[in-house]
Length: 407
Image (cartoon, rainbow, N blue to C red):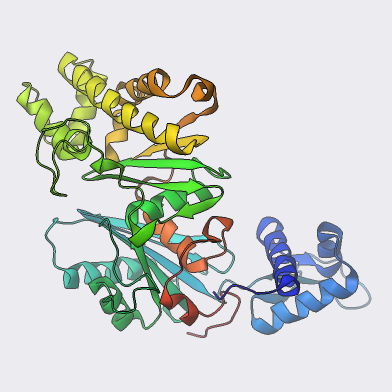
């Protein structure tokens, strides 16, 4: 939604968010109950409520539990879940993840499905449409496509085209074009790992953190940074490419064109290849996890070395930017202490002594839908984490999530 300008507009927006937040937290409330909770003057509160009701963000409902007697039953106010909805889609390398929220910022649903890495974009978007359709059940909280305000999308790639308003000649990503055609709403697009960092920093392991380093260990290795309470995109959308920091000079060739990158050591393919080269048998991460839990020496030794390399990279970044929280996500993190322990040990050895006790290392909590949830946050563009973040040209097209859109 368009950001308010001027102190009075920002103050009013703050009052609206206060009222909406109370209704999210407590459910239906009377005007009197809202007044007790929010502390606003009666005139200000009633003015705010009148506008929210007019916009369709809040609806009135007569309490069924009100005591019978003279006069009308107490009138309560509640959020209107049909007033607006947003979808987040994460087009990962080998899978698709979708999530949806309503105007109350309640998660309507989520769904995931794996696919081949070379699946064409037309088929990926068709799969996304099907997964979104699976959320449109008959229940009262189900996703209503006619109420969509926008779609936030994460894709793999160091540089995302078509999202920088200063690059007027850049072409939209195929996913943007196809999704606009299928859903008829604005589509905001960014790097999916950076969106996962946003999701974890709002709803997940780093919620409330002002300086956060997020690292995802998956088929690729990448991450995101929250610096001074804002998500950091960097020039041309290139921040968070921790997987392309050199850890083995002259080592294996990386897909980025370099050699010896962290991704050549700590990606899923690199770890499984190294494990099999050492005589282990694991076709995927779940099988490697089984070997770890069985105490297999080869698996534990391998992950110890990988974790040490990861920890050294994270320590160098920590010494440069000074985060208070480091979040480790991705499928490889499922190996648990066998990997996280060596990462923590390397951090202790290489982070400046003054910082050692001030950095918290945590496992990600949102799972596969972190990127999709980050896409939704990008659409809502209300989190303080996005206050200085380039929103992209499509943002102006997005109607307020407090404006009613009829199916």
